[in-house]
Image (cartoon, rainbow, N blue to C red; front, side, top):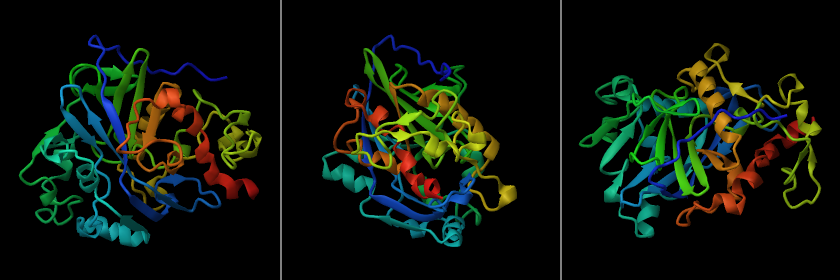
Length: 342
Protein backbone atom coordinates (compact mmCIF):
# COMPACT_ATOMS: atom_id res chain seq x y z
CA UNK A 1 0.00 0.00 0.00
CA UNK A 2 1.29 3.47 -0.89
CA UNK A 3 2.12 5.77 2.01
CA UNK A 4 0.88 9.34 2.27
CA UNK A 5 3.37 11.63 0.48
CA UNK A 6 5.00 14.35 2.54
CA UNK A 7 4.44 17.10 -0.03
CA UNK A 8 2.41 20.22 0.54
CA UNK A 9 2.38 23.41 -1.50
CA UNK A 10 0.96 26.58 -0.01
CA UNK A 11 -2.10 27.84 -1.80
CA UNK A 12 -1.49 31.12 -3.53
CA UNK A 13 -3.54 34.00 -2.05
CA UNK A 14 -3.33 35.62 -5.48
CA UNK A 15 -4.46 32.44 -7.31
CA UNK A 16 -1.32 33.03 -9.34
CA UNK A 17 -0.09 30.64 -12.00
CA UNK A 18 2.52 30.65 -14.74
CA UNK A 19 2.41 29.18 -18.22
CA UNK A 20 5.03 26.59 -19.09
CA UNK A 21 6.37 25.34 -22.39
CA UNK A 22 8.67 22.32 -22.41
CA UNK A 23 11.46 22.70 -24.95
CA UNK A 24 12.97 19.63 -26.57
CA UNK A 25 16.34 21.26 -27.17
CA UNK A 26 17.19 18.81 -30.03
CA UNK A 27 20.21 17.75 -27.98
CA UNK A 28 21.00 14.04 -27.90
CA UNK A 29 23.71 12.86 -25.53
CA UNK A 30 24.59 9.25 -26.31
CA UNK A 31 26.76 6.36 -25.15
CA UNK A 32 27.23 7.68 -21.61
CA UNK A 33 28.38 4.92 -19.22
CA UNK A 34 25.45 4.36 -16.87
CA UNK A 35 27.83 3.36 -14.08
CA UNK A 36 29.06 6.95 -13.60
CA UNK A 37 25.52 7.99 -12.64
CA UNK A 38 23.90 5.03 -10.93
CA UNK A 39 24.20 1.48 -9.70
CA UNK A 40 23.66 -1.44 -10.28
CA UNK A 41 24.05 -2.19 -13.98
CA UNK A 42 21.35 -4.00 -15.96
CA UNK A 43 21.59 -5.72 -19.36
CA UNK A 44 20.67 -3.27 -22.10
CA UNK A 45 21.33 -0.29 -19.81
CA UNK A 46 25.11 -0.22 -19.79
CA UNK A 47 25.03 2.99 -21.85
CA UNK A 48 22.58 5.88 -21.55
CA UNK A 49 21.25 8.09 -24.33
CA UNK A 50 18.61 10.74 -24.10
CA UNK A 51 17.22 14.17 -24.92
CA UNK A 52 17.73 17.38 -22.96
CA UNK A 53 14.72 19.45 -21.88
CA UNK A 54 14.51 23.15 -21.12
CA UNK A 55 11.48 25.16 -19.92
CA UNK A 56 10.09 28.57 -20.81
CA UNK A 57 8.13 29.97 -17.85
CA UNK A 58 5.79 32.89 -18.58
CA UNK A 59 4.41 34.98 -15.74
CA UNK A 60 1.17 37.05 -16.14
CA UNK A 61 3.21 40.23 -15.48
CA UNK A 62 5.02 39.61 -18.80
CA UNK A 63 8.16 38.50 -16.96
CA UNK A 64 9.60 35.27 -18.30
CA UNK A 65 12.27 32.84 -17.23
CA UNK A 66 14.21 30.07 -18.92
CA UNK A 67 14.89 27.10 -16.65
CA UNK A 68 17.83 24.92 -17.73
CA UNK A 69 19.72 26.09 -20.80
CA UNK A 70 20.28 22.67 -22.34
CA UNK A 71 23.45 21.65 -24.18
CA UNK A 72 25.28 24.38 -26.09
CA UNK A 73 25.64 23.75 -29.81
CA UNK A 74 29.43 24.03 -29.70
CA UNK A 75 29.79 21.76 -26.67
CA UNK A 76 33.32 20.85 -27.77
CA UNK A 77 34.33 24.39 -26.72
CA UNK A 78 33.33 23.88 -23.09
CA UNK A 79 35.97 24.16 -20.36
CA UNK A 80 38.83 21.68 -20.94
CA UNK A 81 38.11 19.83 -17.68
CA UNK A 82 34.60 19.11 -18.97
CA UNK A 83 35.59 18.13 -22.50
CA UNK A 84 38.31 15.83 -21.16
CA UNK A 85 35.75 14.03 -19.02
CA UNK A 86 33.43 13.67 -22.01
CA UNK A 87 36.34 12.23 -24.03
CA UNK A 88 37.23 9.82 -21.21
CA UNK A 89 33.67 8.49 -21.13
CA UNK A 90 33.68 8.18 -24.96
CA UNK A 91 30.20 9.62 -25.20
CA UNK A 92 28.84 11.80 -27.99
CA UNK A 93 26.57 14.83 -28.21
CA UNK A 94 24.64 16.29 -31.13
CA UNK A 95 22.64 19.52 -31.10
CA UNK A 96 20.50 20.37 -34.13
CA UNK A 97 19.36 23.78 -32.88
CA UNK A 98 20.25 25.95 -29.92
CA UNK A 99 17.49 26.98 -27.52
CA UNK A 100 17.86 30.59 -28.65
CA UNK A 101 17.29 29.57 -32.28
CA UNK A 102 14.10 27.74 -31.41
CA UNK A 103 12.74 30.59 -29.32
CA UNK A 104 13.45 33.21 -31.97
CA UNK A 105 11.91 31.06 -34.72
CA UNK A 106 8.62 31.30 -32.82
CA UNK A 107 8.77 35.00 -32.06
CA UNK A 108 10.07 34.90 -28.48
CA UNK A 109 12.25 37.91 -27.62
CA UNK A 110 15.13 36.26 -25.78
CA UNK A 111 16.60 39.59 -24.68
CA UNK A 112 13.80 39.95 -22.15
CA UNK A 113 14.07 36.48 -20.63
CA UNK A 114 15.37 36.35 -17.06
CA UNK A 115 17.89 33.54 -16.60
CA UNK A 116 18.91 33.73 -20.29
CA UNK A 117 20.04 37.19 -21.34
CA UNK A 118 19.41 39.56 -18.44
CA UNK A 119 20.82 37.43 -15.61
CA UNK A 120 22.12 34.00 -14.73
CA UNK A 121 20.30 32.47 -11.78
CA UNK A 122 22.32 29.94 -9.81
CA UNK A 123 22.08 28.00 -6.56
CA UNK A 124 23.91 28.30 -3.22
CA UNK A 125 27.66 27.88 -3.37
CA UNK A 126 27.93 28.36 -7.13
CA UNK A 127 29.92 31.59 -6.97
CA UNK A 128 32.36 30.31 -4.36
CA UNK A 129 32.95 26.92 -5.95
CA UNK A 130 32.66 27.51 -9.69
CA UNK A 131 33.82 31.03 -10.44
CA UNK A 132 35.78 32.71 -11.94
CA UNK A 133 35.95 29.76 -14.36
CA UNK A 134 38.36 28.85 -17.14
CA UNK A 135 40.88 30.21 -18.17
CA UNK A 136 41.42 32.23 -14.95
CA UNK A 137 41.07 28.93 -13.13
CA UNK A 138 42.86 26.32 -15.23
CA UNK A 139 40.76 23.61 -13.59
CA UNK A 140 37.52 25.55 -13.86
CA UNK A 141 34.46 23.53 -14.88
CA UNK A 142 32.74 26.50 -16.50
CA UNK A 143 34.01 29.24 -18.78
CA UNK A 144 34.57 32.81 -17.64
CA UNK A 145 32.81 33.86 -20.83
CA UNK A 146 29.64 32.04 -19.66
CA UNK A 147 28.96 34.79 -17.13
CA UNK A 148 31.12 37.71 -18.28
CA UNK A 149 29.19 40.97 -18.27
CA UNK A 150 26.09 39.31 -16.81
CA UNK A 151 24.41 39.62 -13.46
CA UNK A 152 25.10 36.43 -11.50
CA UNK A 153 22.12 36.05 -9.17
CA UNK A 154 22.77 33.43 -6.49
CA UNK A 155 19.63 32.20 -4.74
CA UNK A 156 19.64 32.01 -0.94
CA UNK A 157 17.17 29.61 0.67
CA UNK A 158 16.76 31.64 3.86
CA UNK A 159 13.03 32.35 3.58
CA UNK A 160 12.18 29.50 6.00
CA UNK A 161 9.91 28.24 3.25
CA UNK A 162 9.38 24.52 2.70
CA UNK A 163 7.73 22.72 -0.20
CA UNK A 164 7.45 19.17 1.07
CA UNK A 165 10.94 18.55 2.45
CA UNK A 166 12.63 20.87 -0.04
CA UNK A 167 13.90 24.28 1.03
CA UNK A 168 12.13 26.62 -1.37
CA UNK A 169 12.38 30.13 -2.83
CA UNK A 170 9.25 31.89 -4.10
CA UNK A 171 10.72 33.41 -7.26
CA UNK A 172 7.93 35.81 -8.28
CA UNK A 173 6.68 36.29 -4.71
CA UNK A 174 3.14 35.12 -5.48
CA UNK A 175 3.25 31.33 -5.17
CA UNK A 176 3.33 30.70 -8.92
CA UNK A 177 6.91 29.45 -9.28
CA UNK A 178 9.36 28.07 -6.74
CA UNK A 179 13.02 27.15 -6.91
CA UNK A 180 13.81 24.06 -4.84
CA UNK A 181 17.18 23.42 -3.20
CA UNK A 182 18.28 20.00 -4.50
CA UNK A 183 22.07 19.65 -4.25
CA UNK A 184 24.05 16.51 -4.94
CA UNK A 185 24.63 16.19 -8.66
CA UNK A 186 26.29 19.60 -8.65
CA UNK A 187 27.00 22.44 -6.26
CA UNK A 188 23.91 24.64 -6.08
CA UNK A 189 21.68 22.35 -8.13
CA UNK A 190 18.04 23.46 -8.09
CA UNK A 191 14.71 22.16 -9.34
CA UNK A 192 11.80 24.33 -10.44
CA UNK A 193 8.16 23.95 -9.43
CA UNK A 194 5.56 25.80 -11.51
CA UNK A 195 1.89 26.12 -10.55
CA UNK A 196 0.11 25.93 -13.90
CA UNK A 197 -3.52 25.74 -12.71
CA UNK A 198 -5.04 27.08 -9.50
CA UNK A 199 -8.47 25.48 -9.09
CA UNK A 200 -7.55 22.76 -8.49
CA UNK A 201 -3.81 23.38 -8.33
CA UNK A 202 -1.51 21.38 -10.57
CA UNK A 203 2.24 21.67 -10.95
CA UNK A 204 5.12 20.90 -13.28
CA UNK A 205 8.30 19.96 -11.47
CA UNK A 206 11.42 20.66 -13.52
CA UNK A 207 13.91 18.17 -12.16
CA UNK A 208 17.00 19.11 -14.16
CA UNK A 209 19.84 16.75 -13.20
CA UNK A 210 18.49 15.81 -9.77
CA UNK A 211 18.88 12.31 -11.25
CA UNK A 212 19.55 10.80 -14.67
CA UNK A 213 17.06 7.97 -15.01
CA UNK A 214 13.49 7.65 -13.77
CA UNK A 215 14.49 4.34 -12.18
CA UNK A 216 16.40 6.33 -9.56
CA UNK A 217 13.14 7.56 -7.96
CA UNK A 218 10.53 5.02 -9.11
CA UNK A 219 9.11 2.88 -7.64
CA UNK A 220 8.97 4.28 -4.13
CA UNK A 221 7.29 3.85 -0.77
CA UNK A 222 4.79 6.48 -1.88
CA UNK A 223 4.29 4.97 -5.33
CA UNK A 224 5.01 1.21 -5.36
CA UNK A 225 5.39 -0.85 -8.51
CA UNK A 226 1.84 -1.88 -9.49
CA UNK A 227 0.77 -5.50 -9.77
CA UNK A 228 -0.51 -4.66 -13.25
CA UNK A 229 1.16 -1.90 -15.26
CA UNK A 230 -0.88 -0.01 -17.85
CA UNK A 231 -0.11 1.30 -20.39
CA UNK A 232 2.14 -1.70 -20.98
CA UNK A 233 5.67 -0.20 -21.15
CA UNK A 234 6.84 -2.95 -23.50
CA UNK A 235 3.84 -2.49 -25.83
CA UNK A 236 2.00 0.82 -25.15
CA UNK A 237 -0.65 0.02 -27.79
CA UNK A 238 -1.55 -3.29 -26.15
CA UNK A 239 -4.77 -3.61 -24.16
CA UNK A 240 -3.05 -6.18 -21.94
CA UNK A 241 -1.34 -4.82 -18.83
CA UNK A 242 2.22 -5.82 -17.96
CA UNK A 243 2.49 -8.01 -14.81
CA UNK A 244 4.57 -6.18 -12.21
CA UNK A 245 6.19 -9.45 -11.14
CA UNK A 246 8.22 -9.42 -14.37
CA UNK A 247 10.17 -6.46 -13.00
CA UNK A 248 9.94 -7.13 -9.27
CA UNK A 249 13.00 -9.42 -9.28
CA UNK A 250 15.12 -6.52 -10.61
CA UNK A 251 14.35 -4.37 -7.57
CA UNK A 252 16.51 -4.32 -4.41
CA UNK A 253 15.35 -7.15 -2.12
CA UNK A 254 12.50 -7.75 -4.62
CA UNK A 255 10.81 -4.83 -2.84
CA UNK A 256 8.18 -3.00 -4.90
CA UNK A 257 8.70 0.16 -2.85
CA UNK A 258 12.40 0.59 -3.70
CA UNK A 259 13.73 2.22 -6.89
CA UNK A 260 15.87 0.27 -9.33
CA UNK A 261 18.95 2.45 -8.83
CA UNK A 262 20.94 4.39 -6.28
CA UNK A 263 23.49 7.12 -7.02
CA UNK A 264 26.94 5.84 -8.04
CA UNK A 265 29.71 6.33 -5.46
CA UNK A 266 33.26 7.41 -6.26
CA UNK A 267 34.76 4.51 -4.30
CA UNK A 268 33.57 2.14 -7.03
CA UNK A 269 34.92 4.19 -9.95
CA UNK A 270 34.39 7.49 -11.75
CA UNK A 271 31.19 9.27 -10.77
CA UNK A 272 29.64 12.54 -11.87
CA UNK A 273 27.89 13.29 -8.56
CA UNK A 274 29.44 16.12 -6.58
CA UNK A 275 28.06 14.59 -3.36
CA UNK A 276 26.34 11.21 -3.68
CA UNK A 277 24.78 11.36 -0.19
CA UNK A 278 23.22 14.75 -0.91
CA UNK A 279 22.04 13.46 -4.30
CA UNK A 280 20.30 10.51 -2.61
CA UNK A 281 18.65 12.88 -0.12
CA UNK A 282 17.38 15.13 -2.92
CA UNK A 283 15.98 12.13 -4.81
CA UNK A 284 14.17 11.01 -1.66
CA UNK A 285 12.46 14.41 -1.48
CA UNK A 286 11.56 14.12 -5.16
CA UNK A 287 9.75 10.85 -4.45
CA UNK A 288 7.28 12.71 -2.22
CA UNK A 289 6.47 15.00 -5.13
CA UNK A 290 6.26 12.24 -7.70
CA UNK A 291 3.60 10.38 -5.75
CA UNK A 292 0.97 13.03 -6.55
CA UNK A 293 -1.07 12.85 -9.76
CA UNK A 294 -1.35 16.63 -9.86
CA UNK A 295 2.43 16.97 -10.31
CA UNK A 296 4.15 16.22 -13.61
CA UNK A 297 7.81 15.42 -12.93
CA UNK A 298 10.15 16.12 -15.85
CA UNK A 299 13.82 15.33 -15.33
CA UNK A 300 16.15 16.74 -17.96
CA UNK A 301 16.89 13.56 -19.92
CA UNK A 302 13.73 11.45 -19.64
CA UNK A 303 13.25 9.88 -23.08
CA UNK A 304 10.05 8.11 -21.96
CA UNK A 305 8.22 11.47 -22.13
CA UNK A 306 8.98 12.03 -25.82
CA UNK A 307 5.86 10.25 -27.16
CA UNK A 308 3.57 11.67 -24.46
CA UNK A 309 3.96 15.42 -23.93
CA UNK A 310 3.47 18.40 -26.24
CA UNK A 311 6.69 20.35 -26.77
CA UNK A 312 7.45 23.99 -27.54
CA UNK A 313 5.87 26.01 -29.07
CA UNK A 314 2.85 24.28 -27.51
CA UNK A 315 2.02 24.76 -23.84
CA UNK A 316 2.12 22.06 -21.15
CA UNK A 317 -0.37 23.72 -18.76
CA UNK A 318 -3.17 21.20 -19.37
CA UNK A 319 -1.04 18.13 -18.66
CA UNK A 320 -3.40 16.93 -15.92
CA UNK A 321 -6.55 16.81 -18.02
CA UNK A 322 -4.55 15.23 -20.85
CA UNK A 323 -3.33 12.48 -18.53
CA UNK A 324 0.38 12.95 -19.22
CA UNK A 325 1.53 12.13 -15.68
CA UNK A 326 -0.65 9.03 -15.42
CA UNK A 327 0.12 7.73 -18.90
CA UNK A 328 3.88 8.25 -18.69
CA UNK A 329 4.43 7.09 -15.09
CA UNK A 330 5.79 3.63 -15.92
CA UNK A 331 6.86 4.00 -19.55
CA UNK A 332 10.51 4.20 -18.45
CA UNK A 333 10.29 0.47 -17.71
CA UNK A 334 10.74 -0.15 -21.44
CA UNK A 335 14.44 0.37 -20.80
CA UNK A 336 14.52 -2.90 -18.83
CA UNK A 337 13.34 -5.10 -21.69
CA UNK A 338 16.72 -6.89 -21.97
CA UNK A 339 17.01 -7.28 -18.21
CA UNK A 340 13.57 -8.91 -18.04
CA UNK A 341 14.58 -11.41 -20.73
CA UNK A 342 17.72 -12.49 -18.85
